Structures are given as structure tokens and as C-alpha cells.
Amino acid sequence: MIDVAAARALARRRLEARSAAWAAEVLTGAAVGPADDAGGSAGAAMSISLKPPTERQMLADEGVAEAWARDWAALGSTSPDDGIEVDWQTRSWRSIGRQRVPVRLRLRDADAVARFAGGTSAAQWSRLRDRALRLADRLGSPDALSAVVRRHARDLTAYEEERFAQVTDVTAWIVANPVAGLRPRQVPVRGVDSKWLGAHRRLVTDLVAAATGSPDLGLVDADRLIRLRVLDDALAVGGLRDLASTTAQFAGLPIAPEVVIVLENLESLLALPPWPGVVAIHGSGYAVATVGALPWVHAAPVLYWGDLDSNGFAILRHLRRSHPDVTSVLMDEPTLLAHRDLWVPEPTPVRGDIDTLTEPEIRALHALRREGDVRLEQERIPWDLALTALTDAACAHGTCCLPRAPMLT
Image 1: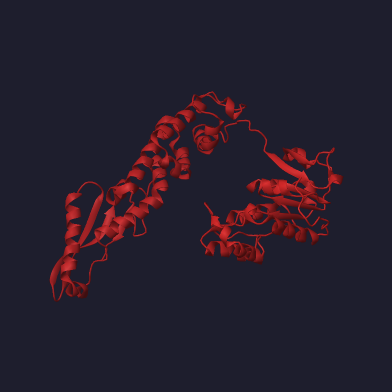
Image 2: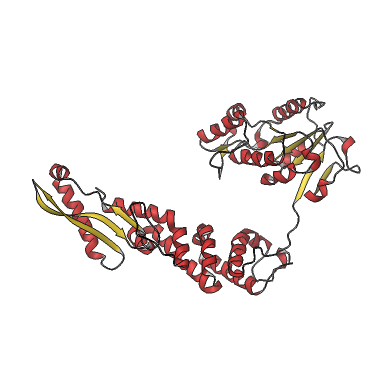
């Protein structure tokens, strides 16, 4: 038997899972068909079989069954017009006689699901639905906005009212006053600086695109800079060994290192000693694919040393997709388990399979997840151990002329 409390819990889970889609459908007015136990759409949002008791169950504990039926009867008597309906059937049993029992709960639409579920989930649904309608009223283009609401439902629900109003006002202003050709700091909207725009740019861009059909705000951003260190004086560019520039400018560097080391931590990059034949690059997270595509990097083997966590392996995948020869360093299960006391939780772990990984890397990823989504940050590994591992990996590529003791430069 599904009692009222259990049905409310099912409705709450369905509401949380489907709110984004239902809010989008509120804007489009999408036609929907009847729902089944798996739940349908906003027009016939949910139907739950109440699994009424059999004759044997009634005889085993008649009091419980009667209390269950009374609870459903009370619900039906207080909700005649709010989209919450309980279907009843008459059952004829040899030992008990004719009994009228509730068999199915029908929740007409998303609002009915929310009314029945109650609590925080219902309040969040109401907020998301109302904000979707306000956006459509302010910006128009409800069909285009439906995709934005679906994509950004979490933010639209979580924003405080002042923040939501600001996002709406800024979007409406940009729709009326295109900002193409300006830099982010030049957008002349009160209270909006480059930091604010950076935090809300994806949502604002999508809202503007829905309202205007333009795929981008057209803002002129500063080029991303890449930091590299030339560890071999013979490879120095005009005598310079520590450089920061754009991908386009670095692509034309007239150098041919024997090995390129890509590191995700800037401090580790800065700590590397002079090293014949080696150039080291700060990977900058998921930007490593750009690094791997640089012609002179693409022509050399790459050693990659990143944080030992799921995001580190996802970044390694990006690098391998742009470069044919990438060897990871200190990203294996023995390294992880040897430094258990240095683990921290990984805030936003990557789920699912990560392709391009070797068997040892896959085992390390499984260990990370098995231990509770932990992270071993690159800089927490003792430096002498790290430098030895990097040296051994470089030796495998014929570049191992590194002094025994680390020398900071």
C-alpha cells in the first residue's frame, strides 16, 4: 500500500526532477498526453498507483488498511478543485464483502504536484515557474526562452529576488542597447562590472540570444595568456626564459624542445630547475587542449602532471585529444594510496567514464571514487618525490640530464 506520506515523497522527487522541463512547458504551452506511473508532462503531470491491499492483507491487519483508506478519503474530501484527484473502486471479497478502496492518485499538472508535495520543493517550483513567466513577459520569445529556462533552472531558482531582478534588467538593457565591440568593463549599466558580468554572463548571453536571435553578446574579451618557462638556456627566446602570451603568439615560437612538461599548478611550474631540452607550461585547467595544439608542443612528447582527482583525469583527456603522445606523471593508484593523509574532498567530481586513460590511470580513478571522491592536490606531494618522478618520465624519452638536487630559479 502507498500511503499519503509515501505518495508525497514520490511527488516531491518527481517535482525536483522535472521542474526545469515543466517550467519550459509552461512557456511553450506544449500539448501533452495522459500520464502514467512514470509521470508525464505539465498537462498531466503524475499518476501514482496506490497498490490497494488484497483480501489476505485486509484480513491480516484490517485496522491498518482502514486507516490507510481513511487518510486517502480525507485528502479527496479537502481537494476537490485543485488538480488532486483520488480514484476509487469497489472490490468484492468473499470474507469481507464489498469494500470501496482508493486505487490511484492523479495530479493534473505541475502545480498540482507541487500542492500535493508541499514543503521546499513546492516553493522552489513556484519561484521557477513565476520567474519563467516574468522573463517571457519582459523579453518576449517564450518558445526560445523555454530552452534557457530548462538549461539555467538551478540558477533561476536559487537567485535572491534582487539578483534575479538585476539579471532581468541587465538583459533587457542589452537587448535594447547592443554591446557588441565593447569590453566587459565598458558595459554602461549601473552596478554591473566585469566581475558581475563574468559571474552571470552565460545566463545573460542565453537570455539575450533567446530575445534577439544573436548567438553572442559580441563583447571583446582579453586574450587568455599562457605561462611557460624555458628550462634550457639554449632554447631561450631572445634571452627570455619566463614568458606569458597568447596561444596565437606562442604558436610561432622558433623552438624545438625534446620534452614538454605540462603542470596544473603554477607554483610547481615555478619550482622546476634548469633542465636541458625541456620547456614547461602552466596547463590552466581545461585550456590544455589549446596548449597541446601548439605546433612545437605537438611535435614533442608531453609529460602531464595534474591534481590526482577526477577533474585531473578529465583534463588529461582533453590534452590527449589534441596531442598524440601524453604520459601522465604521479597520477596512479600507488601514489594516491601512499599519501592518504594529504587527501581532501573533491568539490565537484566528474562522473561517468573518461576515455583515453591507460589501465593504471583507470585504476587510480576508480580508487578515487571508491574512497569517496577524494583529491590529492599536486603541490602536496613532496617535491623531491615529484622531481624524481618527472626525471624518470623524461628519461624514458631520452631527456634525463637533470641535477640530482632541485634548484629553484
